Image (tube, rainbow, N blue to C red; front, top):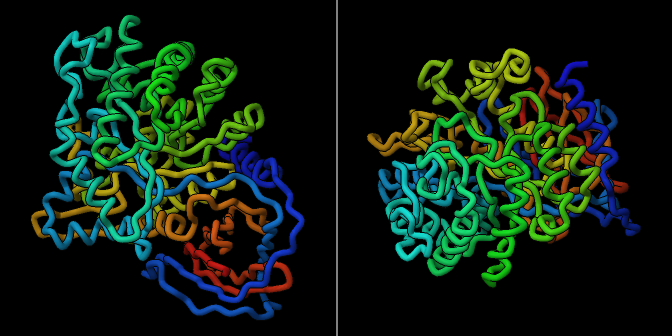
Length: 507
């Protein structure tokens, strides 16, 4: 059995058997039904008429069970980066407002969970830190002034969108170079004498952002601590080093700060390493006492959601929530013709390749075949939620049509791409994929049990705090499928087009 088959099998088993909290109340009757769909043919979250009626000809039946519930959602959204802020600044005021409303208004994607970087990252205009003076252990020269150019204005303008409500997760890509053993932005490890200095640096950042009116809901101690080959900002830790950093430095510093900020460990791919990190850090009573959850990325594969590793950690540490903190269509232009991603249909074709298609070791290449970008996003959202993820965060919200700016030429896609020279905004199909979930599945929603879905007709369902139920259904086949959603004694007959995504809202 190959790796992909194993992952899909684990996903199916875990989705069916995840620790449930059975309820006894009967499902209340549905009075209104709304159906929205995005199709390869061109529908984009289009409202479609649907009614409660018998469905004798349905090929498939999805049976909802709101009495059996699973994880509670923290939110779904994308990331604020300096690159996104710069690209937005090049638009006219009207277009800039349009993009922010598209992401944060209730009528748009209504993003509820976001991420940003602490200091510079590859999607910054240049290298920078908040402690530019070497050996400033007391952080007397600490300043977030570099963020005032693009990053802070973008976040603050998003906060002003009518109806906006979102949390922020922040991650450092690197410590200031003078705190590191290689004295450089890329790679290297934290000097032992600067473990406490770096912890204080992160707390200073949190307090500075709070003073700006941006309370940071959560942090990860380090983005991708296993490294990126030294290609851009990074800081290396092994699991034991991170355990010590959390237990003896960052955890106590956060506790003493008086800030109500959650801490999410790991922040790397959904693969075997996350099991080791969970065992080392969550298995240590002192470190675990400071940890609120685990953050993961998706770059280990283009074809599965990392179900085996997720299931292993969840089985051993069932009280530790896991959220997806980063994923994107990466390595743009390494193999594809530049600009092909500005055509809608490209997102449904198996034409995209990721970093691993070229650079992964031969034994790992089967996990990195050419793939369909719309499938990758939608499959990961549904599969990840069914696997127990409590949140899902995309990477850059906005980039230019080349996939930047990126000061190390690590070009990637964003759901919204901008040609600033023409004041033109392109909303790619990826924008609509995420919006099908972020708009209709709100913070505090509980995933509910549902039978009848599989790898051809993927589906997930949640019950929102207002009592509404949102069901996302993705048809991965090449033909239309007639299916019915059953809720108590009620049946909703629906037809979904080939390669289409639908969200059904029951109230």
